[in-house]
Length: 95
Image 1 (cartoon, helix red, strand yellow):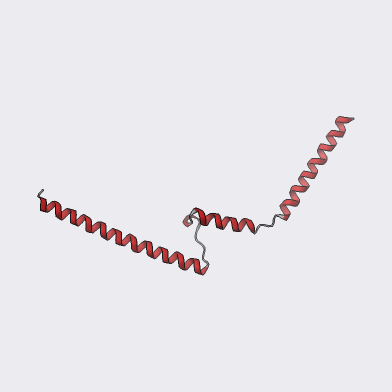
Image 2 (cartoon, rainbow, N blue to C red; image 1 turned 60 degrees about the horizontal axis):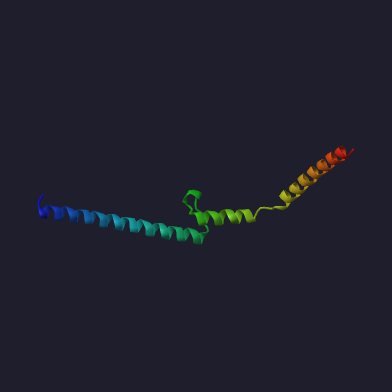
């Protein structure tokens, strides 16, 4: 292969790489603009499209909205019933 052919092949590869780079850059910019518009409109992403920070923010906001009063009451009643069972066992052991 002559030097000229090598140079031509190298030039072709560089042009292909440049075209791919421009295409990827345009796709990135389009996606970035789309994400920005979605954010402004309040549209949420699918979970598989979110990064870790977005997932955490979404799940944390959902966790803050949970009414914990019913869980606390349930836990209190469970502890009280366990405590009464334990007290009965102590009484039987003492007798």
